[in-house]
Every structure is written in C-alpha cells, then in structure tokens.
Image (cartoon, rainbow, N blue to C red; front, side, top):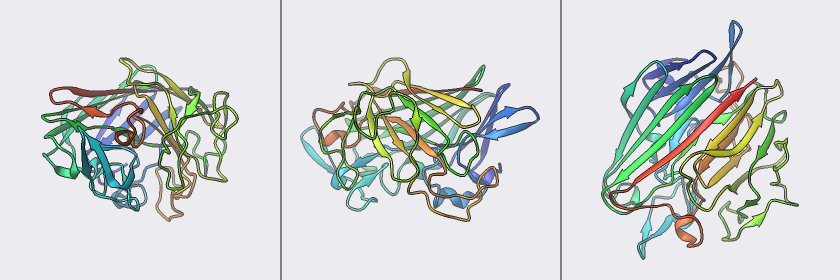
Length: 324
C-alpha cells in the first residue's frame, strides 16, 4: 500500500495482524492477516488515492459528525430545527458532502502498534452547533485484535453519532456470498423506500433480517438495515456480530454502541478500480458492519439520544477480534 491511498500512511503491526491508517478521513483502510509467508487482505481498499474520493468514499473512514441518514437534512436539538447540507437526495448521509470522511486528520501519537488521529469542526460548520474535536485511536492487541476508540468533545450542545466504516471481505472472493453472518439482535428498524426509519421497531424473527443463527449474506438484493443492540451506549464492549469467510477466517465485533448498520455493498459500482489484492471493485465485493447510534435519532424521541452536552465526552469502543 502506498502513502497516496490515504494521505500519509501509518503502519501498525503485531505478530499476526497489520493495519494501515491514513490522515484522509481518519481511515484504517488496509488490514492484512499474516498467513505463512504471505498476507491475506481483510478489507476493501486501493493503492490509488483517487478511489477514496470516488468509488470508495467511505471505505475505512470515520463517518460523521452524524453517521447514517437524517430525514430531509434536518434534526431536532433543544427544541430547535437544525438544517444540514443534503447529499443523499433530500437527506443528509454520513455528515453530508463535507463529512469527517473528507477531512485530513492530524496525527497525535504513534507507536508500532497504535496510532491516534484528530480533527476539528467549528461552531456551525456542517449545520451543527459547537466547536467540536474528534479523535480516533487504532491499536493492535495480541493475539489478533484491532481496537478502535472514537471520541468527541464540544463546547455547546450538539449531535454526535460516529461510525467506523470498513468494507469487509475475509476470504478475498469476488463477493461476500460465501460469508456467514451472525448478529446478536432481536429487533431491527423498518425503513421506508428511502432507507429511513419509519419510527417503529420490529422483531427480526420471521423477517429477512434474522441472523440470530449464522446465515449467508444475500448478494441478490440490497441489505441495508439497522439492528437494535441496546437502548443506550454501554460502558464496555459487548459482542454484536460474528462474520466468517469461506476460508475459515472469522471476525467477532464487540462494541459499546446501541446499533449496528449492516450494508452488503449492493450499491458499490462495477469499476476498474484495482483493490489491494488485484481484484476490481464490484457490487457485493464487501460488507459494511458499522457500530453506531440509531439512524435519524434526533427526529425520533423514543430512539437512543445522540445529543452530546457541553462539557461531556462522546466515547465509542469497538473491538475486532480475528481467528483462523
């Protein structure tokens, strides 16, 4: 991987796992599992930096300040209606056209197995109040674990919902049809035709979203759904999902977050963009498993709040544990 792919590159390594972070979007866009003399790519990424401005806009990035969708690019805060820039039809997706994925983050700290990046947002920038600071730490632990800690502070009440957005492909196949997914959720959020929550919750039992028992990821239709993990952010990570590739590589996701957005990459373009392992980008080439708050939460009073009060700290911990 070259420095151009994510801005200046910052390599992390442990005995079995390597990772590469970049300042563009606060990304962690290169992850490889050592297998004998070679390596096995785990995420979609590219050597070509232009790919992260186009086909792989969100790949590996920290998205926000408000991840997922906000209906009609509006959000309620302290009795007022905030207007944000729209970039998904009439709606705001992942912080809008100039979300955190577009920032050139700065390096705060780095060792052989840890890197910390930070960026800022000024009062009113992106339609949200508060002078805000954002930080992400990527750290490798033995035997094969990547810890991601995302934090934020503000000097005025604001809205914060951050998500780490890699596309996973654990076996290097053309698509994720050979992957098996298990999700520790009994409910999901039904959506309308524009993939926005309709305000209700529904049991996964009897629906296409029942992954309580391990099952294949569909690659003949779109899967873009939010799973309800809890009623609020937890103090410490709890297992949310397990993803297993056809070659036996398995990844367990533990997180503090109350929701898990799962997207099977149906909208990824058919493209000549070369990926890390020599394949080219195509629909269903990777699956995004994004711990976060519930989508459009400010417009649904009964959803877990994403309000960050002045002087408080937002802190998300997500842990990716790998095994073979």
